[in-house]
Length: 156
Image (cartoon, rainbow, N blue to C red; front, top):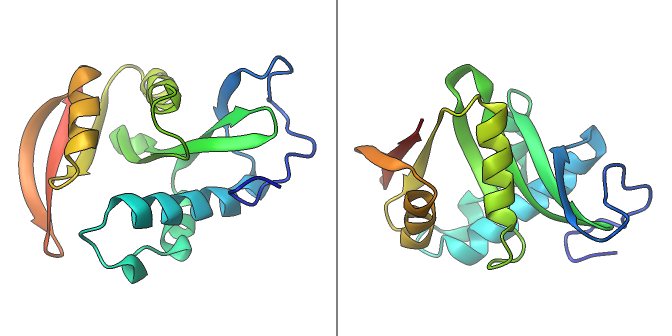
């Protein structure tokens, strides 16, 4: 069993050569996606109390979103959530940084959204802002929600 709690048995869509594959999440993978969501938020968003990151929040939003996963062999390496009606990237989280997994997920979601995508990034998350700027997004708006400052990024 991997560190996200996925045993990898019967991984449909996994590449037999060990490459990372991006595909639509299966219903039985959503719990693992929720664990990744909470773990990455807790580890990265240190300016927010960890108890505010809840699996139930991810699972509630996932009912209205398309969830895509990055899979390497038996391991679920990351996930992205697209709210198609607004072409809005709601979530993008990876278990390992620096391997191009986030870019693979982002490119896949951009393709699924027809080349046009928007997202909000917390203002304190400067690493994510730099990533989105490198990927051709531009900052178009700033705001605050529940005491947390955010920036809107748009591409396409």
